[in-house]
Image 1 (tube, rainbow, N blue to C red):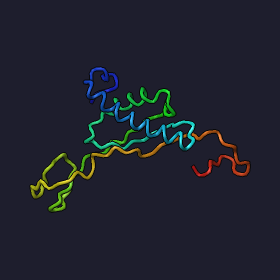
Image 2 (image 1 turned 120 degrees about the vertical axis):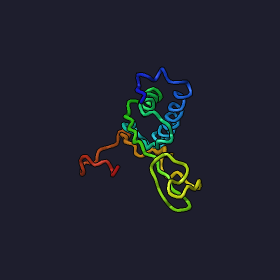
Image 3 (image 1 turned 180 degrees about the horizontal axis):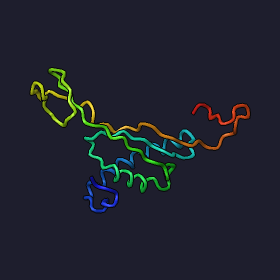
Image 4 (image 1 turned 90 degrees about the vertical axis):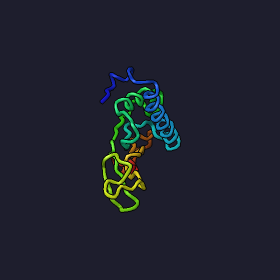
Length: 143
């Protein structure tokens, strides 16, 4: 497993993969921040499948660098890694090893059911300063 300290030893292609992914996520969430009046994003949780070949420490480092000057600067990035899962379209067998032919019937008519995800699972934000409701202290309007 590569750690953040080995980031500079990665190939340019490896560095660009994670940077490209986080740049897209930051652009998307920055647009949402502007549209929805978010003061700042404090935490982002991603669900990433094992077949995406993302190195979590490199992804976090790229996120920290790319988020500077955006509403996501200083936000925590949590990565939930999801394992591979496959299914046979012929016999309906399922498995969790990285196999592209069915271990039961040998068919190559298979599908990846998990492992290719790249989803924003949740986002925690602080809204722009809004007037406090005197009748319900601490209420944030259900957000």
